[in-house]
Image (cartoon, rainbow, N blue to C red):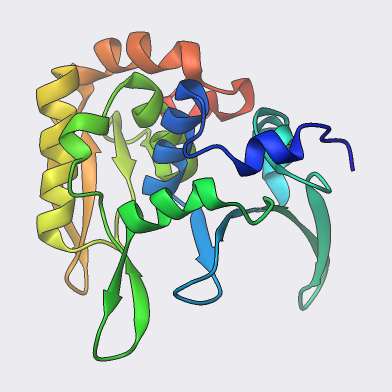
Length: 214
């Protein structure tokens, strides 16, 4: 195991500020926190598609102190070809429990956890958070010169709360658009793109810049 500071990490109650912000952005997007039971500690997990090796490796480097085996390649057999999926799993640690509490709510009817936008998102939103949200769940719409962020898994109220946090903290107007089947996404229009790019570009992994149209 590469990590020589395991005991120190086990005693941490939170991530360092830079990784804290990065994880918040990732968790607003495609990241997940896994908990095997109500009393167990948690781990951070993420999966990346075939075309995202460079991005996956960058996340692996950022969280290297918390990952035992690095990024793993998983071959998935399709109908006509084999795809490569890149997967990250952190160590199971107490410090990830707070992030599970932030991003998941227990559905008492099903007994399962449901992912939510943190209740205090207004205190969490900043350029780093937004950058990683766009890198994980964003898309540049060339036809309409806008950015879409696919927040489909959240309720309309949660998506509106997320939009308001970006507007209030970063002075970027974000629209809430009905996508399908009572699902809602965020849109950032052409007039906001110059400000947005200046704000998030310094925090972007270079292979993901196409998601802001660059």
